[in-house]
Image 1: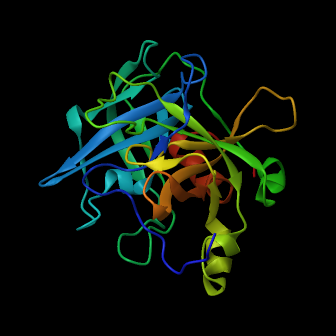
Image 2 (image 1 turned 60 degrees about the vertical axis):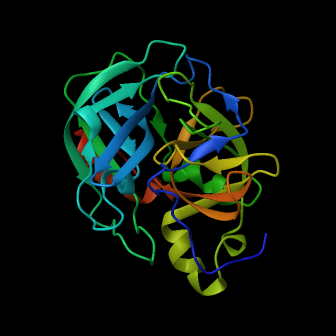
Image 3 (image 1 turned 120 degrees about the vertical axis):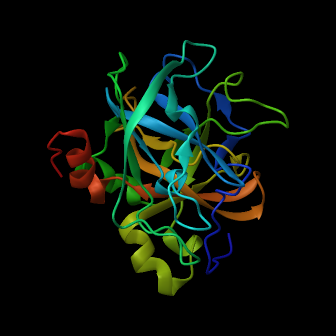
Length: 263
């Protein structure tokens, strides 16, 4: 892939990012995935997320902000759905939105593109596991397999209530394959990028998790990133997804969910 200087945000009025060409996530595996819609006058953004405690959803910061003005998006009905059809998706009301202080809008990119949604009551589902620094370290190597998941558009006219979440298998790329050399240090400090030759990201899964197995043969999945941006060659098919790393901000996430997370 040719290195390019700019990252392209796909949080346009049509939505955010999605796993195009992937496979449906089984209801059991997708029980902690989340979906919601944000609106502003003349703007709508469909986004994904992942349950990181029984009352908190981790998502992308730009899913809660109007990319044109930086103003807060109104969550439609203030409702978040937890789980993936055809399983039972549980609705919850958002009581609070915390956006990482390092998030920003504008042409230079979103900075630390993360937000935490606090729900009105607990969800009886098992939260996702966030990777520690020691668990993430092997993932930073090029060609590591990873899985991105989200509620992306797969065909015109789809509605999220009728379609399951999908997941796509990616390989982690070197930062030099995703940005120009001068941007690599800043990019590496807060982001990962990954791609697949057979599938890509499209409108619908910003905020969805990027997960890895802690070791070969281990059935658990660890969240190492949250879907943020895409580097586009052919929309939905030939793209590299850009994911905000969770390890550098574990302390901030812990403070939002009321748990002390070790590094």
